[in-house]
Image 1 (cartoon, rainbow, N blue to C red):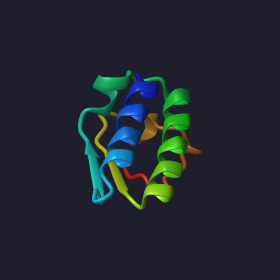
Image 2 (image 1 turned 135 degrees about the vertical axis):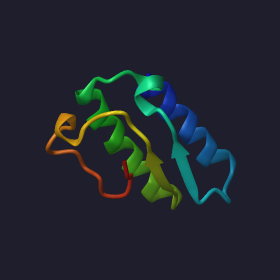
Image 3 (image 1 turned 90 degrees about the vertical axis):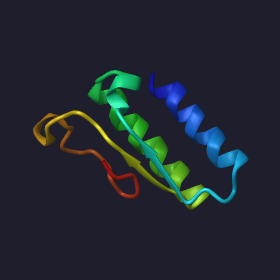
Length: 78
């Protein structure tokens, strides 16, 4: 789920200070496709990316019209 993936990415950032980029493939296959939880996940990833100075890119299987309109893609890219 989203919490487990966030924990995994957080652990990568905490344990490896030389990571500059993280690419997650098939995000919705890992987490499921709950768009409300996805918004919270993106918010948490933005905070993590800022504090760790890491670029995070998520590959998702969804049409742009399926994504929440107020999705905060400040640092995290999809």
